[in-house]
Length: 265
Image (cartoon, rainbow, N blue to C red; front, side):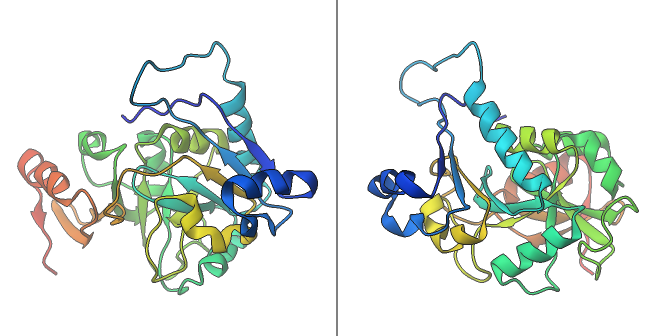
């Protein structure tokens, strides 16, 4: 699993005297919305030793603030292991509606859900594969599609009986889901049909519509392909919905280790 250490965090409200300080580093256009908060996460550097802290006050503050925004029904921007995403509580119908509006997304395009642990998948999905398969692919850059369970919000993707589920290989995201205690609806942080984003400044035009922007720094997946999306709703079969960034490794697990065959229908 990718390790993500929170050695410092900055919390900035775009109002009053704070605005000029932010503008000096990130540009004046980012100071227009007084309600938006920027939460900065600083991972350990790859060069030199990791900085260890006896307490984790800063990352706790980042998590707590993001959780509060989500619980209050707001939309937040978050880093994942592939690209930046927009998230809201999947069980909150008003928030789900809002995330479509922010992205200008076609209402017939589904949102995936994001959870913190493999056992959480069983609450919201009817899983028809071995648990070991889930463990081999998750956490990771893969979205697995299953038949949805009755516990999932019926207003989330009401046009389909299926739902995609993610567990990003990103410690912040997993902890965020755990602290929320319910799934997040997750989609890419961009206007629909535009390029996916790997740095927060790339979706700057959305900031004014968000309660929180969590800056985890540049994300390594420069291909911007997003996660590999695989439908596993039919027993013994798989169907590639989106090749994404991890197709080859995913198919190797599905075919060679678990004997699944491609569903050509």
